[in-house]
Length: 152
Image 1 (tube, one colour):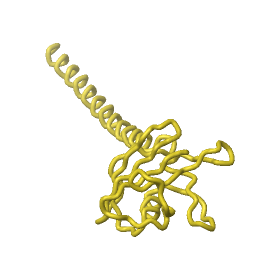
Image 2 (cartoon, rainbow, N blue to C red; image 1 turned 180 degrees about the vertical axis):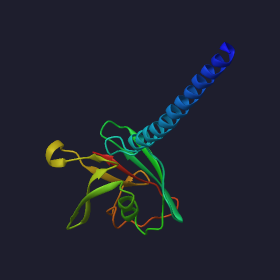
Image 3 (tube, one colour; image 1 turned 120 degrees about the vertical axis):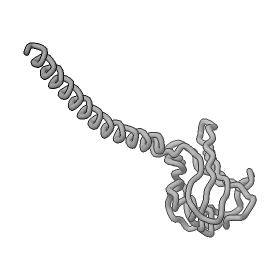
């Protein structure tokens, strides 16, 4: 009789342990998935910056490099169906600025703002490593060319 009670008691304890383990496992999975999503969001946008890599979708592609004031480079491979470099970069949220009499005056690139009035620096647009002769919003995407913005 005593053996029968012990088996029932052990069975109850084992069932409670399994239920507790399942509950903790379910709670742990939901929490870790949320943390992974939050971490991915943080990693993808650190202070507004994107870490580089392949961005966008489309039949045209071009390399794009961002060089900040400390000389740090971030490289992207841009895929788009847009006609101009400016349209493609703005559509992906990589550049922002103000419309002026000469076109788009880019103030922010990859989440980094260059304020000439405050710091005396600005974003310079380059095509194939040379200072561009046209604005980013009027420069057509040309196969084989690379584009970059550098703080100067």
